[in-house]
Image (tube, rainbow, N blue to C red; front, top):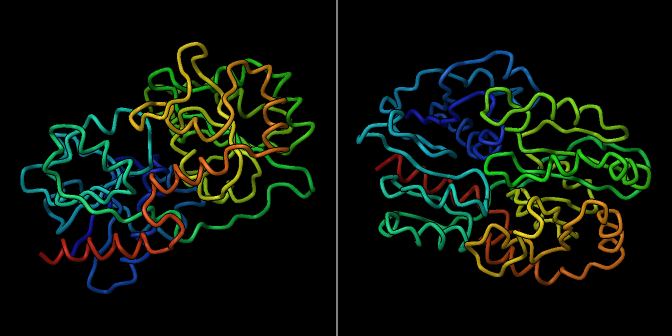
Amino acid sequence: MKLAFYLRHCGNLHYFAAVKPYVDRFAREPRFEVKLVVREFDAARTAGPEYAGYRQLFTDDCELDRYDLVVTPTFLREHERTSRTRAVQVFHGMSDKPFTYERDFSDYLCNLCVGRRQLERLLANERNRNMRWQLIGYPKFDAPPAAPRLFANDRRTLIYCPTWRKGGISSLEIFLSAPAIVERLSRRYNVIVKPHPNTLNPAREFYDAALVRALESLPGVRLIRSGNVMPWFAQADLYIGDISASGYEWLYFGRPMVFLNPQPGRLAPSSDPAALTYLWQCGAVCDDVQALPELVAASLARDAHAAQREAVLDYSVFDARGGRATERGCAAIRALAAA
């Protein structure tokens, strides 16, 4: 039985991170032939450590109807599928951005949803009222991979995760415009910067080589190029974000958060699950980058948002720490493949 895990492009490391728990399971089952499907194979982009042990699975055979089932973390475009394509949507994060929820998922065999927040937002779209779905949780939470320690000291560690620049909702340029603040943070703390993978991908529309060079030259800062942020979250004491969906993954660790506002005066925390800033209930919001060090220090000294973070996690992720999301998702995929 042929299973296609459709990534579209080799550079979409965040898509691979979303399907990897499934690939690991199905590649061990003899009755399944597992393929990582891309539009064009790029050996250079698969040479990194994240694809080690998986390169032999790649194919550029994008005739999706040739597979018994297509599992995808991205939205299949009209030219990529036919009415006969048997597709399962597994999503690739828990975004607050509207892009995902404006899509039509009614013609997927099943949509494997992370939790109630995602499901309710999808069903609020009239086109998705009759979509087929199942709540499974978040497979990336089942067994977060470990990574070697980045810092050999006893200082606290901050991780900054700006979203990509589509829609003008990234704080990256604000962060880079304040080198004295970044230097001040890096003198007191270990600092990791883990941007959205699209920020570092020259093939993406909003790629800016100057911004990448600026990230690479930050003194005392470790830049991470990865599709899966969980190993680096495990090493951090505080998260700095903006509208990045990575903030929902940070909730798993139960540690403080600070949000660097990309549009001060326009964006503010909201209790509306459909708002861009719903997650901002879970930490302090920084409207002026000059105040960032003080907000970081205060949040580390007194975590005032712990209860709210747990409430948002419970609403956003089904059985968040139960360790069975991949099992539930695989069971659903097996049943659909056999149908």
